[in-house]
Length: 455
Image (cartoon, rainbow, N blue to C red; front, side, top):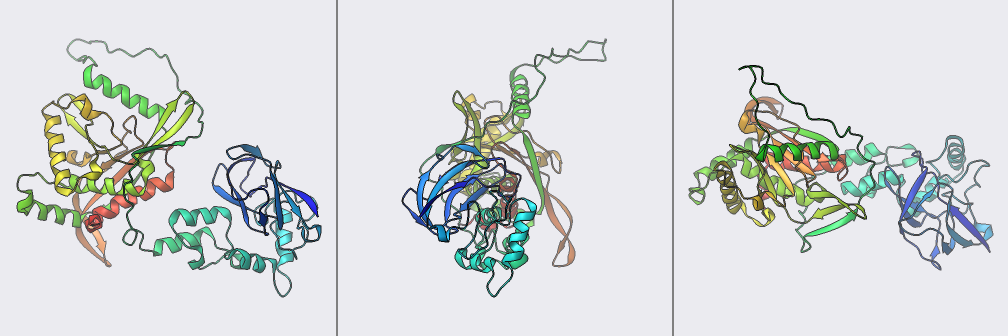
């Protein structure tokens, strides 16, 4: 018997350090080669580390939540020396020993030569090492590919592998996901009883902005220049927009869609006796789409919060839906509280009250506080798309462009269809590109097929 240290390996993405997110084993546990021992978080992804040894877990040398450099011992194993495959190497008992100078590098991920030569040697003989690994873990796929599959809800065992030695590639996973009926065969999650939770937020460096600059002044050049005092709503709006634009890193994505079925639904609702006293517009369907999509991608409905202990992300399990409204007083963003609990008719009434109250200048401060995500309908001004600025305290804002008839290809034929563009700006500290894209794709999917709203 011998005691072996396993050091944090280089998983092949320029890794210099990683955080131990969760241990999957405890001292005294018996593990086999390639059993997952822990999850680590790198700058790019969450990675499962497999055991390089068969034996008994001795000691966990690094606590969960601790960040350590590559090469730091993180766990010890008590092994039978005859079956030991060497630290930091994914192998079976029959695998060749790691080449000298290879370092603590996972097979298939690490620095050039060592990993390549091991794969070449493993491919000889009646049963390759890769085949044995495949039989022990089911599917050959790198940890980032496994995470991608989990995020997309793809079962790796059903993916046709095209990589070397039967390895599943990123393209394989994406192709499989695109072929699935992503939006029409997925159960929409329910809003939970817990209204809000916080998750740890990464520390971010201060934004490099010039501060303390004197405000510019406009001189009155006779009758050619008019000075307008900045006060009231305009002053509050300008302050909020500057704060948002220069504190939250904005990223905008957009998608052009065929909204013909949305327009058909709006026409039917307008003709319905149940909606005789309610103004119905495409904004109603847009609002329902945003609420539905936010339930499936909760981080767009979250917020970045600075506290004395550091930053954290507040994930809201409810939607206070803000609607940007141009009023005589300036831009206001009142919100509909707990919009996720409203049916179509009640949501339509709430939108009516909100817009009428705003235009009359009677929106109260309470109606403008506590928003979680906002819609701005720039289509009413004839605009196709835009890059809206996020409302402070939120992580996302969606812009709906004008809906107009355009030529559109349907079943190989060009036809006139009602087309619009949906754009969304997001706080990149809170949500990444995959979440942003999934959310906008969900909104677009509802506008293309409003029947998705029928749960």
